Image (cartoon, rainbow, N blue to C red; front, side, top):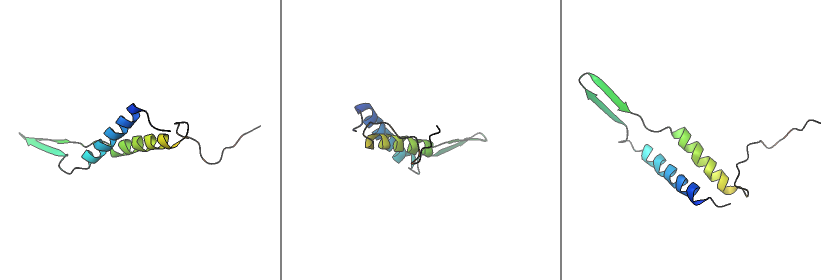
Length: 76
């Protein structure tokens, strides 16, 4: 199933955020008057998980991501 326009835009934005997060000049360290601040880069694991979820949703026929494993147990 094709992604909606909102999801496609979100996927493009997440990919751009991931590419910019890998830029070595992105992390900034500022030191002034004995104090230092370091600006952190975004959480790559969270970004990768969101990208994987959107890509998986685009591959399934119903658009829903499968949450269960390959084997399902049923008790009767």
